[in-house]
Amino acid sequence: QKAIETAKQVYTETEIATKPVSVVNLAYRQLLEKELHSGQRIVYVGAGTTIEAIAGNLKAHDFESVKVFNRTKEKAHTLANALGGQGYSLTELKDHCGSFDILVTCTGAEGAIIDDFLYEEMLGGDLSKKIIVDLAIPNDIDASVLSKHRVDYIAIEDLKVEAKRNLKAREKEIFRCEALVEERLNEFEIAFK
Image (tube, rainbow, N blue to C red; front, side, top):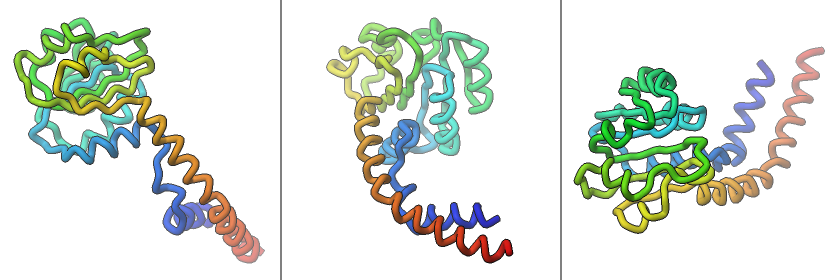
C-alpha cells in the first residue's frame, strides 16, 4: 500500500510522467493533435506489439472502419477482431484497403513496402490529405509517397528525437523523485514499527 501511495505521489507531484519516452505514446499524442473523430477510417499495416499498443490506445476513438493487414493473416484477424475491424494478409493491401484517413504502419520488412505505385492503388482515386504514422525501422513508407501526395507524416525518426529530449527532461526530475521516495521510506519504517 505504501509503495502504491509513493508511486502516486511521485507521479502527481513531479514532472517525471509528463514527457513520454515511448514512441507509441509520442505517436499517439501527435495523432490526438490531429483532431481524431469517429467518422474516420484507419488502416494498420503490421500486427506486432507496436501496432497492438497504438491500436489499443486508438480503440477508444470508435473509428468508422478499421482494417489490419499483416504478413500472417491469422495475426491480422486476431488484432482486427479485438478492434472490431477486418483482417487481411499483406498481399491483399491493394485490393481491400479501400478509402482511409489514417495509415499506421510498423512491419519488420527490410525496406519500404509501400511505394508510390501501391499507395496510388490504396487511395483508389481519393486525393484528400492522409495521416501516415510510420513506426518501422527502416521505414515502411517510401520517400516517393511523401513527395507526391498530400500527407501529414509522423516518422519514427522524429519521435526518437523527441523521446531523447523528453528523457533528458525526466532526468532532471530524478532528484525530486528520490527525495519523495526517501521521505516515504522513512514514514514506512515508522509505520512498520
